[in-house]
Image 1 (cartoon, rainbow, N blue to C red):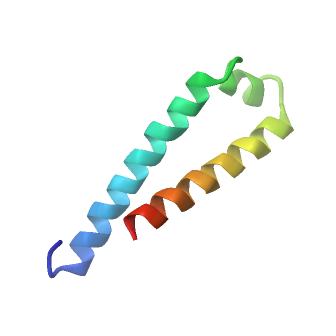
Image 2 (image 1 turned 30 degrees about the horizontal axis):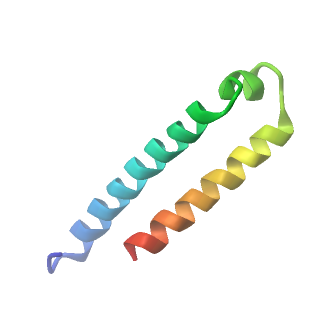
Image 3 (image 1 turned 90 degrees about the vertical axis):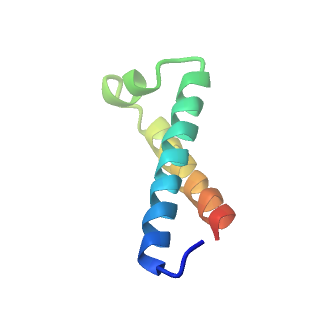
Amino acid sequence: MTDYPLVNAVVFAGLGIFLFVIAFTLIAKLLPFQFWKEILEERNVALATLAGAVAIGLCLIIAAAMH
């Protein structure tokens, strides 16, 4: 991209965060139940663990694609 590694890091980090938010929101909307209600009000630990695993998986995919 440019000869400035700090600029590259900031651009790619911003792009990665943006893509992560879009992908995670899309996954939450496609679920057959209310995602945040289940985690916050119903205290569904299994769903929270799954959400964390999905978040890590998405981040790894985005990081590998940008690398």
